[in-house]
Image 1 (cartoon, rainbow, N blue to C red):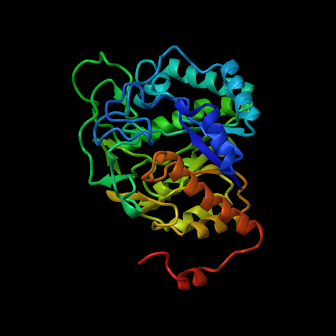
Image 2: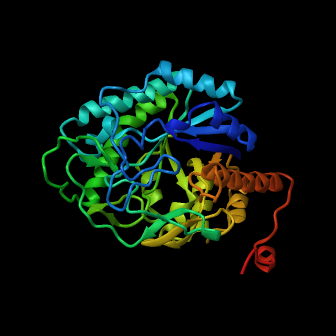
Image 3: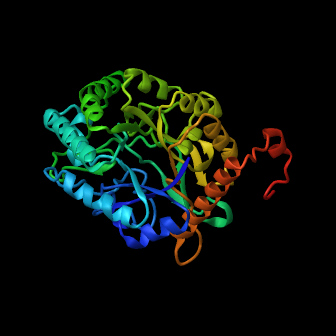
Length: 373
């Protein structure tokens, strides 16, 4: 297992690369989508949150695809800093919104994804994380929910406000869209769109040497903003895997999102999907509660036994990258850095312990003195 750090677009510079190295990371996963562009309720000092029914921000330029040359330059900058660029996470809605919506530009947007995959292959970047969702990551709230009043995010009830025209994936792609809202589609139709997407892009991904890694729905509710969700229970990941046996059809396993779900046992799901060797990389975070009421916690303070998860992954031979996708913000002058450093230290120490043969039993951990009441 390898320790990594996820970096948003505005963090792709030497300061953050140095922070990653200093905290023991060997890999980074980068976000090239600018989630914070013109985001009225989305400050850049934390993960993109928006508001319960407000978008993160504006999508990018429709005709400005990531080129092989700029990806090669980015990879080289990261390598000079002593790190490896493991993956790009997420596609810009400007480049693929009509794949999600089954709209008139669908064919063009399929060609966009083909071009991005080929550029990634040429640049030697082997994983593309994606989230096939209409509503996207939305409906969340921000507050002092974590230990000691640290700022964190969560969900406090369903969000059924319809999605306005010109918006998808919780970002605005058309400011001049006509008034109105996105008609509700069916779950079967959304799964059909996903299967058609994978049927058309997986062959190109294989040729390019790129693996597509699907993120589950976050928050994982059956519907969000009057639209269906795809993967809102752990067993639904299997349905996605079964669409294609292609080695490029992989999972972006978000532990926090899986734990927020109702349904199959969390640890059984992690064990199953890691045994199948279908996990490309992992979002490593902890939560308390389940949808529609949960909050993100410090890594050592939620419902998930993170040491048990690492032991499962280690025993199943998982050799991919773990990143803390989110962390509560500590009350200091560098809240993001402090929260991430705390999480990364926990993960690094736990991996070192496993590699040295220290694998306490579940019974021993239950009998241990708790960290706090």
